[in-house]
Length: 266
Ligand code: DHB
Ligand code: FE
Image 1 (cartoon, rainbow, N blue to C red):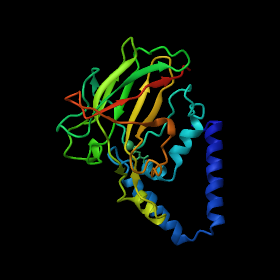
Image 2: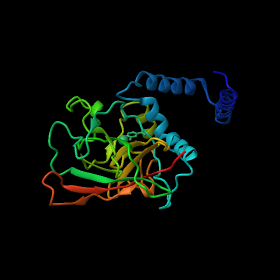
Image 3: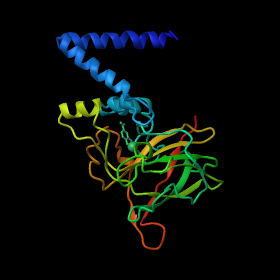
Image 4: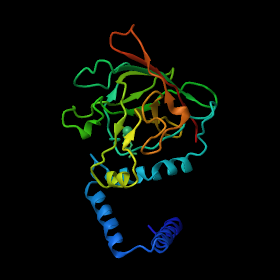
């Protein structure tokens, strides 16, 4: 619908696109090459691949917009949990789980098994939040999300957990690995043209929602992961770096991971 905001954004986009063409004296051949890239991204943009989003992400656009939108969620300790980009691999309707459940289905990935736990609180009062839903997803140790990998069971490494009165959560997952974003398409072509690698540091995604609170779309990053300072899609923030601590006492886990989430009311 042609609201004033839509009109403004459209006019501004046209202005910047024209400036881009003028400044660079863009030729018809170059334009055709760019068009082919956009069309290829369109053809590859299904639920499994989301190439259009991937393309914007390696250009830093989603991270920039995240920062513009959520500038209030800063790095300070007394602030709400910082946000990070959604990325192309979230799926709706992840399985609903009970606290203490595992999101690992299929094989037991020994050496990566992680017990993750913490509490969801109101960042102002410090009170625990009841009824907060943590929607979590991450890659398997082969570096693939479930929908990218025919060998993984449907919805592997995805789950939704709802907090009780004490606001705590806990579940079993895996310690993720650094992972190359799919680079056999237009996004890969651009990375190559810029001499850039396609890797993301090891990360776990979350969307946290709770009645009366602003949703948080975020990721946590393994502090010791390769590429932690050089994320292909620019999503890392200091306050989102976490430590996987090796443990022996839990026969079901190789690592312990503690992380609390702090939410802000509207
Ligand atoms: C992107 C984000 C991810 O979390 C990921 O695993 C791969 C790619 C992205 O922003 O394009
Ligand atoms: Fe990811």
